[in-house]
Image (cartoon, rainbow, N blue to C red; front, side, top):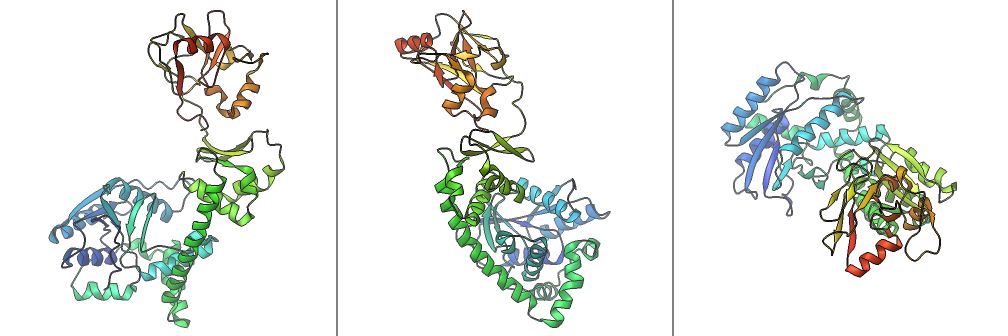
Length: 434
């Protein structure tokens, strides 16, 4: 039972996913008994899903088996929450969350997926209508948001794994759910794949080869998407310039958008992409548009795209209306965000008062301006998007005149005082643009 070469850039300590089934048992035995191994440490993790009455016994058996091979085995209990997902997907999500919680920073997660699993994964992706990323199936080594993952059996047929387990007298757990053909993968494994092999004996090898070629194609497309994304990002890496994006061919613009969202651990739906490249392209650039994405909102305004949390800022920190003498940082809350500091001076000669936008004067005359303008006009000129404007702390003086929009603009009196004292304000928002 051959293993794919140990990746040269992988962490030198391994954490093996150990369900106690035949495949993971064979893999853990092989790793634990391999002479002159290129790694420096080996641990196992068993995920206790709690879906079978014998789950406690399975966990105990895995601990004992690993101990016999001088391998520490951690047991992680999880609650499988379906929340609109199928049981397979929910269990998988819980399992990977457990792996992530257990894996140490210097460890590589090792999983026992083999060539037959790869063939099934490709077929499932085809049936779901997946794009090139999904069709590339699993990689023998990858580093993603879950960390580094090595699958040393990915080129190995299932029969070779079974032969190894038998030759070494290994025993393993038979999970009855693996025979439940109401589950999609089991339906493929026990009904569809045998039919395919009857007519195409090399079906598993051919499908795995296709997955490898699709992975190569996906790598090339992602490289192009990374170049395109770099060209359309604004000064902040979480803001996309719409005109540059729409200047790309639609297929490349779509991939760049998906990569942008992926970099923030989000997935853009086809509907969201249609909004950006279709419906929203016909709207005025000054109009604020939005599309919900779970706990996040995709927004367009001022010729840019943004991703911001859906929830309003929590009511934390000092309440609006508080007097501030500048001697200590002002921690904001109740709509505004972050912390406001006075730098370069011990404090103001006369305290200022922080007010909520609804209580502030409707118009503001910034230093150097001949006339007062509405707050909306100032915010637009400063590039503050509509949904973030209530987060900007506003400071008024003793006469009730507006003197500061955070550290973005000052009134004439405050500007003169700051210049005379060599001072300035520093507003550190949680994230102005979401």
